[in-house]
Image 1 (cartoon, one colour):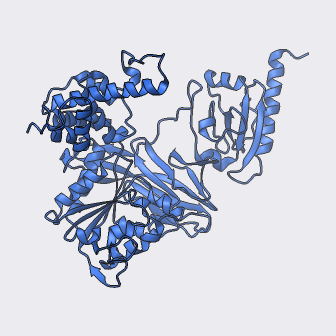
Image 2 (spheres, helix red, strand yellow; image 1 turned 90 degrees about the horizontal axis):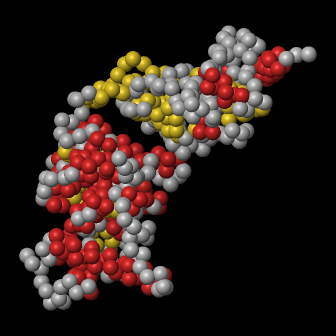
Image 3 (cartoon, helix red, strand yellow; image 1 turned 90 degrees about the vertical axis):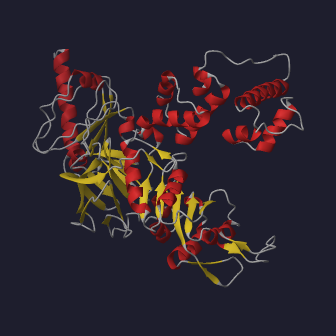
Length: 559
């Protein structure tokens, strides 16, 4: 009779042989199936020498990709054997799980190692280096190794390279199962970052459909019927960083912002169109204004049109103007923004919200430098530089048919991505001190408050950070620097015998009166300065002050 050790070894051998049997003679990148591991370790001597497999320990068959992995994959190159991966991972196998088996190409495409039973990628290939005066991006190559465009290749010329069927991509494919803008690979601080651009058929890496991932040299990327091999080279692309820590009203000492400043400084003197991309609150409007101030058009007007705030039925009137009687309510001629910005700069904020029906008219205006007012047949010459901004990735919108590809290319003469505040935490103390000095006129600022702010993520970016500084300055209370969970004392909840609506109304009124009182005290009763500092209408601030008896109805500003 076999002892427990012998029985375990026999079970290991049978399981390993089953894996080897499944892994032979299959199409590359195909999923072979799942096997249950009944608390056993896979033997290292039983796999076929010429079999290459990839093993994932996942919580169940439905887990998709690295996010669902308890352990990880172990890729076996041909003519090699599975190696013992250590006691910690051995115990995880013994706890049971499911094995996902992939064939050799998928196994070699992406290999990760995990510690402590939690998915943690191994050290990634270094993609960029930052010095005091320049940033260096490591070049990478993309080569089609299978598919209709077999042999086609491209080498990155800068920070990012894109793949798709549109002519503007770095690697242009003819495969009809590939989207117009399918995938982008960017050299970033974490390594080479792959991002799917909302493609129809998805991006496959290591046998999984991914939205974003870090790729290593030798990785195979699947796009439709096409397989592309990614490799990094030793060549580098150098890009100068601006020596300035301020560009117009935009502030930043981090490498990311100094790179943006350097690019915009060089391009501002031209008349080319600029597309600023970035999350809401990152300072795109401030950068657009700085481009205008650094250009030869600085003496002309800087006109802003927020495409997301104008009803679709009125957007063309706002951009191009309208003739009298063009539609109901058009009682007079109106000059549009393209005419108003003559000899200056037109800033189209949130251009991604521009209705699809209005995009051809804007494209023609940018192409032939003329526009036609709504309800008028005459075309008017325009002389304007356009800077556009969006929080969306317009390539994704092009794939979805919500944005015209030709208008995207016309706007993206220079595309600049503005980094989020969480990507440039080194700038937070600089911004806090700037906002504090701007609001108070004082250079004194407690270091512990700056440290507390620097630890937060700021999903609203610079705009949210400024609001936090402003709140603390106005309230004169350290609790204004942090969220409610960090405050020491809970607020007064009021009389619980009263109805909820009455108690709530009273609490709001008490807070509002205290807020207005402190605000007026800080600005010595000057309504104009007080209202401007908090972004409030002067008339509304006066009404609140009168309502709470903080000043008489006939009082004037203490200017």
